[in-house]
Image (cartoon, rainbow, N blue to C red; front, side):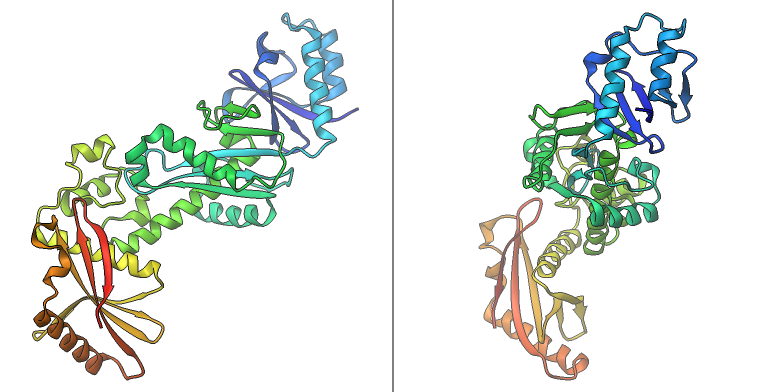
Length: 397
């Protein structure tokens, strides 16, 4: 069968590529490369990795020239025959491989996201390591991958879970969660970028630079990166001033400065050495504590479908911590923070007098800013602990 193909050899792995511009389809088992494949005269150095060698000859030509060449350098003839046989066999069947890659491993804040993608042999132009793409390229490829792939799974592990279980276990949990989305699909192989076996499955192949070489792993890298970047951009709107939309949680100088100035957040990974060095969650002023508590409550309200209308709205007569809208109802929320329950918790501060002040502030706001047609609700949020956590949210009136 006169089929053009390419053999990539890297460290202890080989990739076979069929008619498709250096796009590997599957890994040759490590055992086939024990002898070492270095056929001079038939291979050239690939531009993006000096350790990668590739053949660009039709299969029958390569086989004939290797047998006739004086450059066999000790390679057994069955080895190349077996590789060519694999190449031809995979060319005539639909290869079902799941690619796995992670993003956010080294970030100081935000989740770890593991992507798993089953392309099923669908060609997508431009797939490569997500770090080598621009943001615009990643977004466009993400859309195409989601449209064409047989299956996509994302495994999210929060910063809190990472602190509790450690990064190594978090990576495995993330990979298991990602693969769980592909249970209804049949596949023959799982290729994981790197050298850590994240999944206990006999079909797993570990490969360095798989996100660069293997299309389904490249796709996993891209969808995980886009999903996490979008999440961190949203977090940046909830916690302004930290720059999450730009550094997406990684340890840049601007991020370090924000932590030093404003304190760390619940979404920071406090078990990580840089956060421990920065003192973990150490807010220095009452205002910093209050701001953090209000940010937590605002984030909670948004998850419940509220639109945040105003934060820290105040006049010389009155003030409201958070004003939000859900449908035709305006919510006026008082946020109360207590480090411990020694003082009775945050709700203990909502006295009858405080409730009257809240009602006056709400009516004053509506009179000045709303043209009518809205229902009014008063609410209180109880925030406590170090780092602060939202303990309870209560509608009062």
